[in-house]
Image 1 (spheres, rainbow, N blue to C red):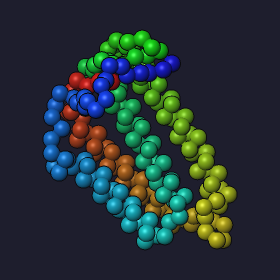
Image 2: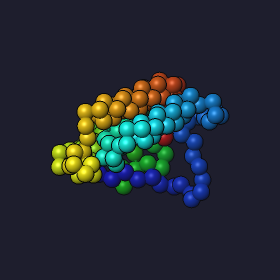
Image 3: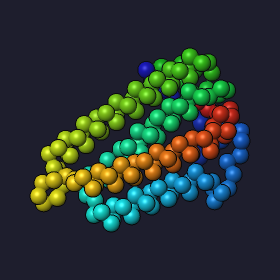
Image 4: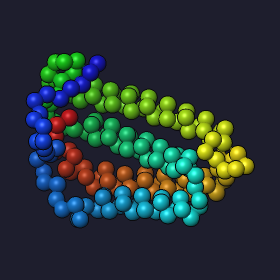
Length: 173
């Protein structure tokens, strides 16, 4: 199965929705995301995290992002498949197409993040990227990693509901 986009000229922007995006400085979802990242950076500096701790935090964030993008695809009511093909054939804007794209996304995104999880577990259990004593983390690190992950979860829950009116408008799948 392959997905493709046809007919787009280089340098042309296609709006994702008929609803205006608005001023980025007034986008509470963006500000909350920036704040979540700033708090994570402060935690990493204060707690003297190694790169592995940050990889765990951002793995959790990626799982949350994937989950909400899957939901966003599934919630589309009206959508365009203009320029979109499946297996080299133009896709029709049907519920079956939407479901197929959602499953395809979930399967591929999930498989990538499962492999990413295996690497993180191996790195964590072997002490790779850990401190000089061979420990990847201590229990305090896990509490702060979980805190940062929950911050990102809260951010994306807020963002999902905040942007939902715009996301449910007519979009390209």
